[in-house]
Length: 582
Image (cartoon, rainbow, N blue to C red):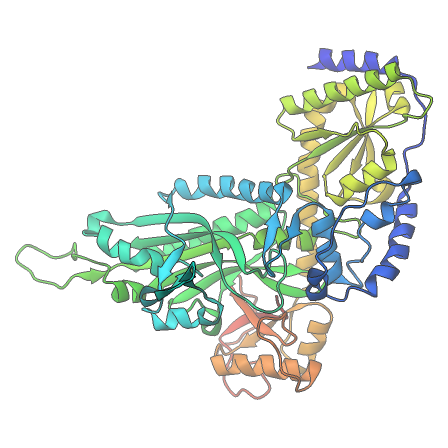
């Protein structure tokens, strides 16, 4: 590999080119600020932005005058909804569809989801889980069999009522989740305790017809996810799997997406309808100070088994004894493409996407620089061939690399476009780089000169992979420090809403009573917005419980510490994390 790199260096030294490297970061910021003033007056939220179905058709103009048209013009700090929408569309992650609340996931986004699938499949298959596929449709009778369960989805169920011009005798639901789709067949397939555990997972899409406040990746009418459904003989075995899966979810965020999460248990009010309890991983969006549910793993108990008759003989029965059959213990767990939205919100900046290297479809882009109108065709082709040779070196060590040899685009225009798409590392190859046998590097996650550097061409095959791992680690470290600094403990109610207003998630001593939880949300909402009615599907203004963290701080004294709700007379049982949320 070193010999090949030397050949590249020698070849590049024969190419003598000159020219600038395009617009500076300062110029780009000025263009963004100018364009943002005009655009911000038109866009005040995702709802309005969605209605306009923004496009990204602008190309380069003479002197790159069109750059402001294709750059992200809204800022993350001043207009987060428009920034998020622009970052996704102009970063080539998704496009808007003609059915509101539905989105087209483009290859860059789907690559992230495929990476998550590959990683997660390895984990769950090692524990005995197998993938399968059940139908999209579910009959009304089956869907409504478990009343407590369907109440959690009733308002969101989409129904098929006609086939052509004929009305169906019985309407058919499009699955909002698959418990009632799968469990009648678990009762059919599980005939003995020897058939346990039954561990199945689906990668599919489901429909939940949320009519208000759609938000790409976070709240959509159709979304892609995985849903696991397992049956066990004992509660202990079932509960162990619940926690194991939750650990895998934390791994998706922390190892792949460079996103820190808090693991915990949902309050009874927030648990999955029809289940015994719900565990969760919770994230934090720094720009808005909101928490976000990132993935859940539920212990369903025996409720669904009793409803659908999923029973086995008791293996503890001795010969001659008669005992009734026992119901199996079940769990379910799901992780969706919400993962992508959370990643974008946390890492993106005012130039667009910032991709963690482990999930980026393109990890490295190589841009030739210094080509001018005076450059001969021979010189141009020679430089391009050297760029291709460097790409070959990187592909040999499994780096996902792209070369940008497009004609008619200045280096500055290309830099802006690849930065907008979040490519973690840019390599620039020009006369100055040739002179010192190196390439210029530019990290996407660090702005300005602090993110610039050099790598000798002979060391690219080792330095670039190490560089990408460094970027991944740094992105996680920054996000983790930010999250940790915005989790605060409060015992005095007067400090609660000010802490929320400072973009914090707040840990308070909590009695765990459902009515107290409702009152905390009401009190914090009223203090913030008065008596204006709130939409439950909109990002919350008041504080709701996010989770009871497994890692509990010290400070609650049994028999002494009171619940933080000023109107509650009960004693606190746990520290509970509250926050405004999506």
